[in-house]
Amino acid sequence: MVSLTPNEQRHVTSLAEIRNCPVIESECSDEELSMPLSDILAEEYNSDWEGVIFSGAMQACSLRFAELGAVWSTVGNSPTIKGEFNLVNFHHALQVSDPGTSRGVTDFQRSFLSQLCPIDRTPRSGAGMQTYIRMQADVDDLELWYSDIADIEQPPYPPGFIKLDINYCQYLEALLLTKGTYGWQYLFADVSLASGEFTSKGNYLKNMLQVFPDLFPEHDYSSLVPRLEARL
Image (cartoon, rainbow, N blue to C red; front, side, top):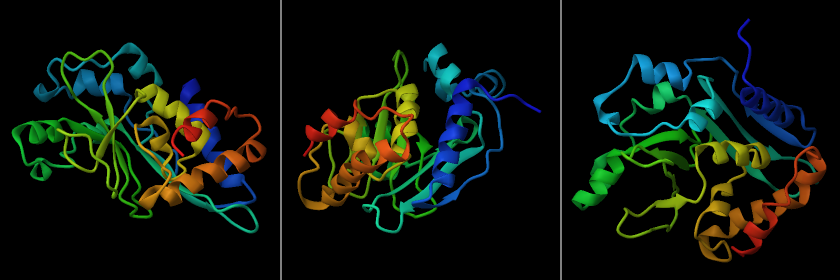
């Protein structure tokens, strides 16, 4: 039997926390292992990755699961919270031309879009939220970009995308806390959740920080509180 890395075990445990929580109804993935990032880089290196820096920390924290995810919602008398995540193995992510360059209207936008590889999706609900890693050469810490069916924009980048102020390893850390609560990525982006189409996600996040410390007492949610307060 193949041993899990410490980080993989943490994410398997987190998935079990969702699956076994009495006030959460969920549909969870299996935990089948695929290729580690180090093997992908050694065996399937692509010239498109020339100059892209896959740091030692990134390779160490990356997960080998073919996919790891869940779609879930609270039930009963608990405050309403919904969420989903589906972590994509790098073996698949680095080969996907997604979201495609046709959405770009300038050369810069088309170049930017061609650099994006999906690492997290919402396929079970079809909610249209995705997180991408930007395969940009000569960058020590590869950027993460979040895409949503919402009015988000950071010119000159194409509409529908917003940069996150965390790296890949920090993204995985935050996912252990949030369990994929819809809109959790906005806690790490320059956006207001106070009005309009973001209200529902702001409410999910408020309810998350109200309920999750009791549901999952082994996790410390204190770092997320000021982030939410700054966006409401």
